[in-house]
Image (cartoon, rainbow, N blue to C red; front, side, top):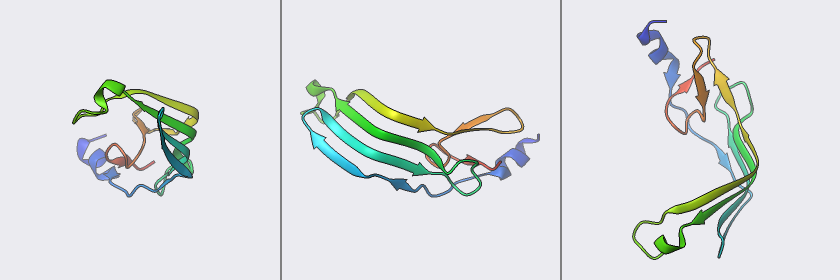
Length: 102
């Protein structure tokens, strides 16, 4: 497929994110009920979902100007992917760049 054709099929779309709850605690930031809705034309209703996400900072960096993440724990996670006719795999449309139209 010519490069111009592929580039025309790619476009940016807004991202709709739903979160049930965000809590800040001693163990880090906890996000529950995370859902990232898929853009129009994506073959699944969501591109990313998780029952619970815990982001734990590196405690030595918390008081500095740059906070580093020590670990990320994802419970009951789901990630949708799309393989196009040319064999490319696309994930997280709209979040990490242009989206492919199936």
